[in-house]
Image (cartoon, rainbow, N blue to C red; front, side):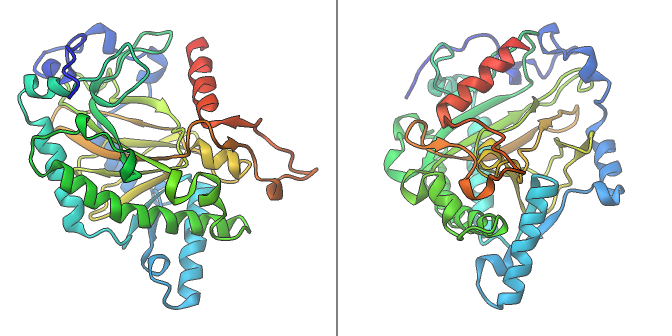
Amino acid sequence: MAGKLAVGPRVETLSELNRVPIEYVRPDEELVSMGDVFLELEKSEEGGPHQIPIVDLKHLMNSGDPELREKAQEETRKAATEWGVMHVVNHGVPVEVMDRLRAAGTAFFRLPLEKKELYANDPESEKLDGYGSKLANNQSGRLEWEDYFFHLVFPEEKRDFSIWPKDPADYIDATTEFTRRLREVVSRVLAALSLGLGLEEGRLEEEVGGMSDLNLQLKINYYPKCPEPEKTLGVEAHTDVSALTFLLHNMVPGLQILHEGKWVTAQCVPDSMFVHIGDTLEILSNGRYKSVVHRGVVNKEKVRISWAVFCEPPKETIVLQPLPELVAEAEPARFPPRTFVEHVRHKLFKKSQE
């Protein structure tokens, strides 16, 4: 148990204020494109071609009819190519397993602040593990309207239970069961995306570490109600460094995707998981799969909670670079070779210079 003292107020303590503190107010260029998330969702749902694709994984998860499996693979490839994101349904993780995960995470964030602070991370270290709030790491010094809990959940032998919540009592079992089920889905989606590149189905998973070394990191994002949601963001616009990110939420809208120059609000699809492509797969695919820019908006009416699982290669043992089969004279390599940790540092360094 970390037992660190909090640095600055947790965002949940600011939710009853009448105004957003100045350090949370976004730059003017961002404010132009921010509006009421519930109205934005209505526009998105009416938008037809600008609605994020829903991919049925039923025949991807269960071999069944080869024709139907091929169709599911093609839908997965198309979504990863054209959008970089997709809702997936019939993914093989039982609804009761997802509900149990959500119940445990929600119960943790409902604990009194002093109990959550027992698991606080050290903001001065490079480790995010534990309970925390986002620190400013950009030139503008803006903060994000979010608290979080972060820890590694797979491979199981790498887990550090000393930082996992002991309250609620079901947290460890619920999270473990969900992660085991999700790991199967990760392999299936990576296999479909490999085939979509004309590669053997196990190639991408092997390139990101395989069953033994691909790390699954869980981040529970807690976005409190906000007195002035038109002035701040739960999370600023970014791409993920992961290979894939799987996302569940509590059916409160807030995730927005930048698609064809416009922000599209993700619809809430019951029993689905949201999957998007991260930088790692964009690099390996030489840009054929898109690492999508996304952000989180907040609202006055409801707390939003999301559970993001980042599927990350080992930090230093694998070099990320476009696969040789996908590089040609007409399609030269678009990314220099880097380890995962080098990519993360390069990205953070570039951001700090903006």
